[in-house]
Length: 354
View 1 (cartoon, rainbow, N blue to C red):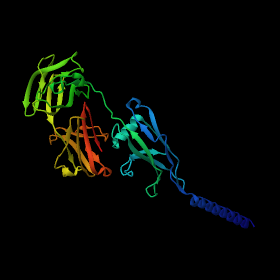
View 2: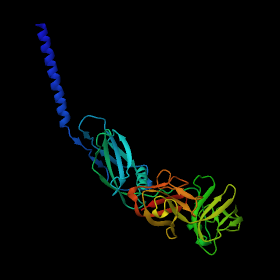
View 3: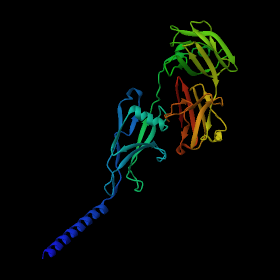
View 4: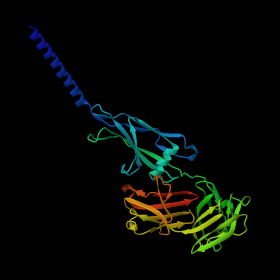
């Protein structure tokens, strides 16, 4: 009798266990895949440097469902509109369901993605929900963000370079700047005149220190020399052209190097994979170098005088140029005929690909 009761108890327990498994199985089958629902606090933003630290935009999304309980990872994706997220900027959000941006952070993101400063552009954003490589990702709806970024201009310590070529007016003269604030200045100045003399001044006027000629040595189109505060002689460059001017107030030396700029690399098809420079054209009205050329997916650099002594790359991919920086990457989404602009004003060296 005892054995019969024990058998009956075990049979009932096993039957209950089976029924519990069936219920769990039914729950798993009935749960559907549900992608996150994505939203933004704003869909149109004009950014200004005066509010760079302010919070300006927040993305939020609902939690996804993948058909069973699992640890979900969210990835925020932001791309230039029309690229179909071919090369998005991605932010690993872990299990979070929101992301805030300040004006400064959003501006840097827009510049990195190729939006032109002071012009209205458009980005697209979405969130990707993932579990493992063996389970398909779930992408949210896409939101378009109209965005006008600004150009980040740093006011470095500077000297002004008034001269005959611009009417000897310090207030409107181009500057050479000390990006390290160490008394060593440089800047790119277009000097075109029959009389190519100039001076350096410590302020945009003649009321403070100005530096005049003491000595010089001319080598072809280039010049090196010394100056002194208050010296009456004028500095000069040998030819008309776009010059890299340097001034060192620690040892009172200066130089002028004539430059002409070009592209070279694997991306500009006319460059023939780093074999040929693609020349740029200088516009004296805008003070910009530009070229319209066909690009393929690849990389390139800017360089002066078809040589590597002066070259710019973009370390950090932030559209701010660095001497001897890393190659500038052109993603497949930017392949085709593009206008590339080089801006070498007052220590703020930047570029755009339009």
